[in-house]
Length: 484
Ligand SMILES: *Cc1c(COP(=O)(O)O)cnc(C)c1O
Image 1 (cartoon, protein in one colour):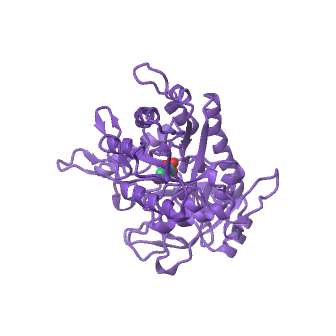
Image 2 (tube, rainbow, N blue to C red; image 1 turned 90 degrees about the horizontal axis):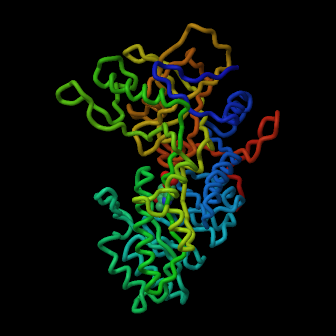
Image 3 (cartoon, rainbow, N blue to C red; image 1 turned 60 degrees about the horizontal axis):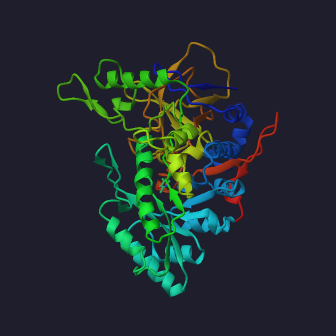
């Protein structure tokens, strides 16, 4: 048995943790797991989740910031991660009734929960208020509904207000979410003043979650929110937290050079100056300009290589200074408020991998090898054009040198587009039926966010490893069996 990464002309070598390598060396274990749970399986490593939490907390500690992390649970469906978040004493950011209910059932206390759902039903709001869960309010209708429900229950609902429309470099950042920081500011001042009609609402804090991954935009948004916060606190509010959402970049790749070469290679292929490196020469957002001499559009994938990522990314936000004024963390500390973050992806760095079984091999009409997996496109899908990391193949028979083969991985949906990775892959040998293909670092969004049950296929099974003991195969636990 041996495992091998794809080694094409433009490799994209994923950062691969030791726990992942250990699993890939246990082919017998994978046999048993896929026999029992089908294919693909998603495997999660809880100690890595903990490490990611510790790294972010360390930054807050360095700058002496009163802080709180809420795991944005929508990035992965596994209960084991919610349980781990509770065990590791962080909060959980829930975005639906079911997410909220599950976190409560798993033992999260109301202090450790926030409800940020984009659309909130009466049932959901009532449940949150009854359980004393902080609600992030997105719009005026929601605010009024929350007031009404809290009044009917004769309680005070704790809320945060979601803001958007921050100005950065003279340009307003558009968002469909939240109250506009310019247009709604006068309303906010009235709603949360002495003459407010919202008697059953306590405004505890402000919240934002920005699209994209800009450090400067996040820092500027903090500064602008703090101004509003000061105004409201000066007029009698007692706002005690600022929640800056998620969007902390992570790094998936070993090498910057590989990333740059790949982007260059894709451009050359799109211009037809070299042979395709993607299925049907898919540009992943790029295409040839009308003059045929240049490439237009943008690479529509996650930016897989990031020198500044995780805790450093957070640190850059906290130490940002506008015009050599005080840094963000000083301004936060001066006000004695709590700074909150809601990382999803950043807590899932190196936490997950997806393992699928090879079902068949065939050559298409162009003579290209297609390797069919017991898996479908929705089980490795994000909002972007492709998952770019090189997968591994676990061969059950020895691999001899010299028979390298180019291939695409295809899935079980009856769609021409069910090509699991659009990248052309090169392996030392054609995989055989029953070999395994392994996708690395799929824990954040890739496994579940778009998973569907078309054709009535079963959803993939989620498994987890609580801890690893030296020189022993890890104990694999089943997520579905976690008792609430
Ligand atoms: C999606 C989301 C997050 C998490 O974003 P990541 O990029 O995974 O860190 C946090 N907060 C809100 C409100 C979100 O919608």
